[in-house]
Image (cartoon, rainbow, N blue to C red; front, side):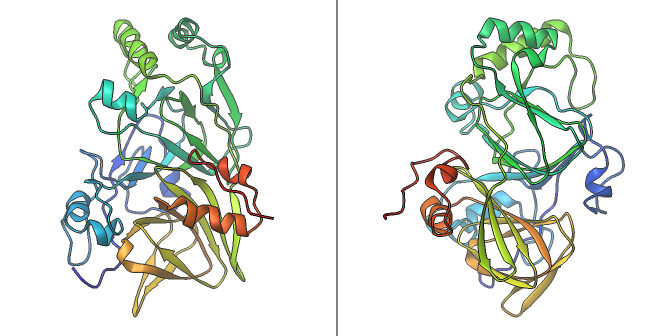
Length: 359
């Protein structure tokens, strides 16, 4: 196919019990169903929650179909993932999420029968004063101690509680126990997977009780996938002044995905080297590809195929850009040139050691 433009997709919705109406009321999404909206899956290739193209010549085709038919044009030259490689969500933690974890790749392959696990990152859009998250276990917690605390619901005895502030981001490796909320609005980027194990005596879909025997079995399954090592921290990201009135903040970057926040006063050109999910967290903006122009509403997302090469944004704009980065070219080089140290860059997410600039 020639003449690629931004792809507009359906947004599957999860109405889990912890959700509210913040995505509608505070992000301005007027196309969502009534009742609880816990998660909007902005661009998803997860079976059962897959996005479908809703405009243009590819209308009605699933994201999986588009990716496998035109992998070079959508994902980038030479990329053959067989599925779209990452998932983006907006999560309204009006209530508190269950304490849960997602397996890492090796554990998911061994115990879940899936090709990948689910490492993720959360970028905090809004948080009430005093909001906190649970993420990772305290040093020295062993399996028996963790089992007892999870069954007793004594989470602070074993889990790290971290302050949550708008504008910060945390990278959460697979195998890390976590939860956040209440009153927290998050943009999440993660591997394309829905593997999960949780420890709660209630179902997250509707709040109905989990029988005690089933909860004990769930906790045992969780313990088999738990990684005691990660102790992630929320970080503010690293900024690059791209142009006068144009700032790119690299929020997180690792082997599975990267996430940037672009703030544009008047106009900016954003390079598109690989498939990029652009999510508008500011006022409606105008996107331009050549002579084509279209509006992206507040709270909406669009998929930018790699074949675009670049996209022009008319500001003022506040946009999140999720993509799978060439770490050396897309992340390390611009951040080192902007004066950020190798240590700070390395804390954006795991990966090879960041080279240091020669004196």
